[in-house]
Amino acid sequence: MKKSMIIIASALILLLVFPLFIESQYIMHIAILILYYSLVSQAWNILSGYSGQFSFGHAAFFGTGAYTSSILLTKYAITPWIGMLIGAAIACIIGLFIGFLSFRYKLRGAYFALGTLAFAEMLRIFVQNTEFFNKTLGVLITINPDPLMFQFASRTGYYYTILVFTILATLIVYLISKSRLGYNLVAIRENEEAAQSLGVNTFKNKMTAIALSSAITAIGGTFYAQYFLYIEPSTTFGNDVSVDILLPAIIGGMGTVFGPFIGALVIVPLGELTAHFFGGFAGAHLMAYGVILVVVILYLPGGIVGWYQDRVKKRKVKRGT
Image (cartoon, helix red, strand yellow):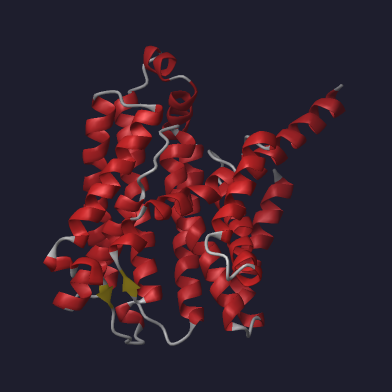
């Protein structure tokens, strides 16, 4: 435990001082992407990693956060800091609506995954056919380097912003993992009927998980919009968005506190390297992701963190014997 705390503290200090030693804007961009994917994947991890409710439609919450803050900014001049909170609240309501329909009627496994996928696709079609959201043209955000407007003169400001968001999301997941909610979610994941027979309110716990998950994902959507300054339906509500959100958690380790971050450390640099060496081959990074995903599922079913935890346990058993 003491060794783990030292490693975590060292990693946190390294993340805090990282921009002080990096001059390359490209490397800063990679670091921002790693933290950004860690954030949204951590949100997915709450629902799908801990409670086992595998979602293929988190783009619904992501796009809601991105569009809410962007529309409020471009049409009503409301700062994205407020728009982010409003977007998170709307995404939470949408999440609760999806959860109510799914959990009340006991949709699980592939049925729940397909249900979330269908809902995200419905929102994409709605947005791209609605004049208020500029249809397929998307929303272009005017450059205005002002921290009060969620824009910064350099990538350092974006780095520290997403770092704070990611740390808070990770802290929330850590607290969940050590709370009754976390134990209940794990029990639901392992055997929902058994958990229910022991007095666990499965409906209430799953609704709590989807509410937290959707709200945090929407915050990631707001950051995406303000960082790239342009959004459109396919890049916010598309199926590939949902896949990008879930991959880091699966590769790093579902149902673990640091799995999404570890997974993002693998996925983001790999995507950049693939794009660099196979830039002329469309979809090369997706093929690379697919290969890694197959390898992880076959040889590391618990992800990288799960594999490491298993090794530590085996060492302790050997020492005990």
